[in-house]
Length: 408
Image (cartoon, rainbow, N blue to C red; front, side, top):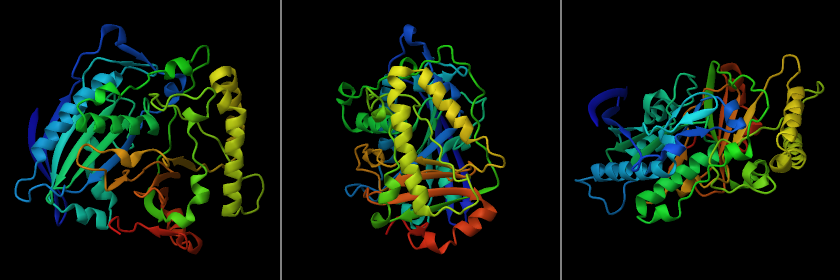
């Protein structure tokens, strides 16, 4: 373990002290015949973008004001992370190339930090530049093809006794479902000594989605730009239509895949609004998206399990047609709704707030459930001139609040 004690001044009233940095390795070595982990065809297409998520926990009611148990919690997290990595053995390895992981047990990055503010100061008015400091090595949304680490963790403790756990995981090997399952299993391993008896991830992605003879196209790259990210919150009465768009690929396949399936098992469906010059209304777009989702599931996704890879090649060909329009502007929407994000209880209660880092991916939208599961937080990333208009749109503001306090 390396003790750094590096202090970073962020705002006039805020300092970040990096206390230590170490590598957490699995509690038991990976067996030799598991040394190479083959990626599925879908994962071979994915960029190495690191998806960031951060969990905020207030001080426990029983914790002492004078002797916060930072050291105990940090040691608990490191021990249980080591045990969890022994089960999720590929995550402590290194990305070898586009098709495999070297399960060499080199471990994951674990950084401990002290944030010299009250947690409430961050939650009262969340700021991107502050949230970004809760992730190590600036990995959030980074897709440097030279990076091989799969997982990095920063645990930050606040003056008030609260804490944040910031995690970056490579999208090359983990979609939202896998990332949330891993975090929830890690939490279970922290609070329950017997959790290893029921934590059982299924490493079946390469078997379900083999590359076979499919030609391997270039690795996906998502365009960055001079963009601004904003957070909008929709309350329960205004989100029914939005929540209906969620697709869980594992559950939609026939036969369905286990919820504990590990991997990046995501695909997209396109909705075109460029067929004529007319302006499409929001409710019309929502209807089109629901219809297109049902068509995608019925025509392709439900058949992926039995008719792979022919049905997938057909799906790819149709997708290409949707993007062969001159001067096409593409907006990507990823829904994290209905995933058990707020179930990560490490033994000191469920998180008070869960969020992502400010997104730098051009024209990208993320949807996440609010803590009570009834509203939705929407993170919109647009070029500056478009965001200036979007965030002032009266119709939008009639339904959503712009970056409200988390404490409300």
